[in-house]
Length: 350
Image (cartoon, rainbow, N blue to C red; front, top):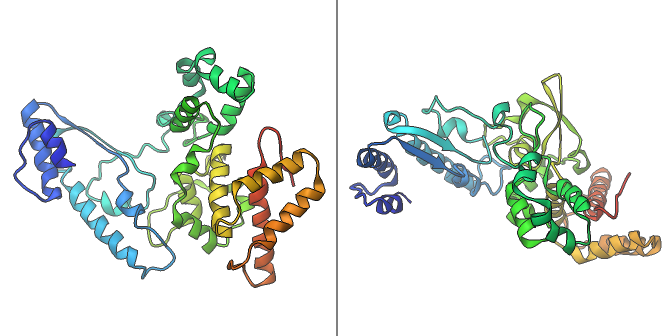
């Protein structure tokens, strides 16, 4: 990537190693344009996350690769400190914090903005921005018409699906920009979050901690517990919060955060991924549709028959052997299925 950037600006780089090319490129850009350089780095943690297949054992072979990648990235970013005089701004994004301490230890002047109130709305559309940039009669009319809704009904469903992300103490909630653009472009309500997939290590953490899935939408935690820095001692809730699967619903006494799913899109996306893992992908979405249809038609006998069919089909699956764990497994499974049934036409309560 450094070679491509250099070629774009007709700059010749002498060195070949990437961690040496980085500072050389910065200096030559500065000298060529006589201006401070702005650096934007997206997904700084990808070399870490992409190798985090299973966080369950410290002797996992992937940890060796992760350690090597952390050392390499640290060497790369260490060059930014002595080059401060050449830099206007450096903006770095990622989905996690657990590798920050080791990678950026030299850069002691970095300022984290993810939980700063003045940046609460930087990563999504607010309701006001949605109204300003996306006109109902222009952008929402086609979506409403295709789905048989009034514009008012369409906006309500749109908010339930894609709004709700809150990152700071400021009570400001934003829409996922990618989902907003995708839904309006495709004129279809869909779980666009699902297409990115849920990291395998998150699913494994859920299984490892024997976590009750039903509790995910109503958690209370101390805000200090939401930072995860040790990659070999990962905790589920901080990771779900950092990756956007959980968001702030309410703050009590500035210390206790009530967490939950930000919206239906995220809830159903995570639910589908967990369900696939729990059942070895033996429950297909068309079957969920027919179960929903039975409930909407108030055909209880058909609903029971379909549910029994699902449970009977779960053969060759590592279902817990103890009575307590087996009961928890089926309880979670039933909850996952009913969560996928929920939409504007059907609400499931327990």
